[in-house]
Image 1 (spheres, rainbow, N blue to C red):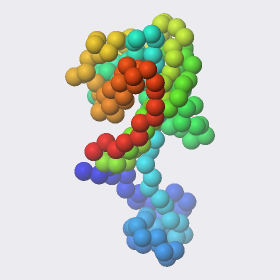
Image 2 (cartoon, rainbow, N blue to C red):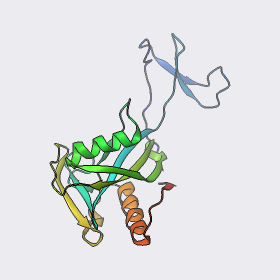
Image 3 (tube, one colour):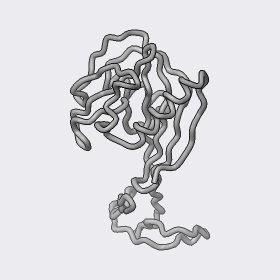
Image 4 (cartoon, rainbow, N blue to C red):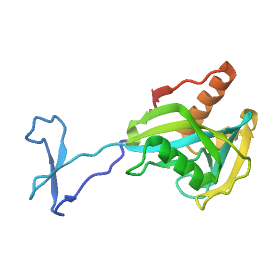
Length: 182
C-alpha cells in the first residue's frame, strides 16, 4: 500500500486541485490548481537520525509517542526546512536523547517507497554517557550488540541500520550502505 498524502487544495490560492498531466511534457499525474494552474509536486519526506555509540555500545531511545510507542529506536525524525541532513540528525539526537556527541560519517541511506520516505542515519560518537531525554523519549539507554532488544525495535530501518553498524564495526571499517526497504 502506498502512502497517501493526496493534495486537495492549492497552497497558493486555496482552490480545489485536479490530478492530471501538466502541459509541460511531464509524464506523471500532478495536483494542478483549477483556478491559478499552480502545479503541486508530492515528494518523499526525509527521516534523519544517528547511531550514537560509546565504546562497544549504541544508544537507543524508548519511544514515548506513536507510532510504536514503547518500542526502541535510534534517535531520528523528520528533517526540517533550512537544515542539512546532518544538522537534522544532530537536532533529533539532541531533542530525543539529550546526548552530547560528535557527528561522524553517513552510514545508511534507505528508500522506503511504500511510505514515501528516505531514511538517512549518521554515526555519532558520544562524548558523555549521561543523557537527558526529551518528551518523545521514555528512556535513553546504552546497549551492546548482544543486549539490543531486537524484537522490540520500532522500525525495520532501525534494525537494518544497526545490523550494518555492527557488521562494519566487526570488519574494522565503516562504509555507506544504500538500499531499498520493501
